[in-house]
Amino acid sequence: MLHLVGISFLNHKMMGQIKEAKKLWQDGIAKNITFIVTKDCQLACKYCYLVGKNSKERMSWDIAKQAIDYILDNEQSFQEKSVVWDFIGGEPFLEIELIEKICNYIKIELFKRNHHWFD
Image (tube, rainbow, N blue to C red; front, side, top):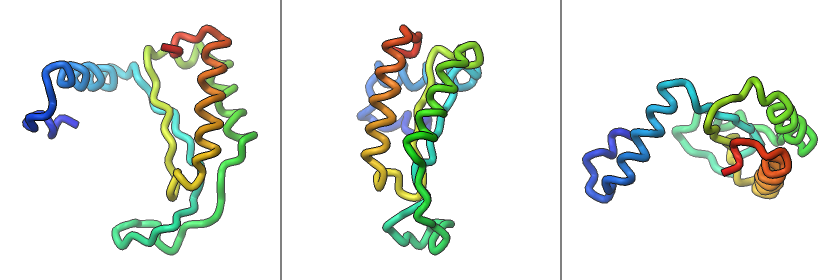
């Protein structure tokens, strides 16, 4: 993101937010929690290293729920002030319904547990 510094549409407030996010990452405070929701992709991009290798595999709701519950049940291992919930895959939007279900469950659980990530 720092290569965007010279672009005029970034205002001073946005630059402060970018610098703060960078500091959090450098300090090891923020973490990514990544869900590989599918290995499927409907595209055949020439630059993609997975062209011809993708499969129809997808993450089940049960696996996603177990992962979320594990993370939230082990709060002592995840004391960061912030965390990024990330969705990747072949083409993750092929599983948009699963992503929406995961996001809703995360929000509900964070609220029910009065978790410090619920902001």
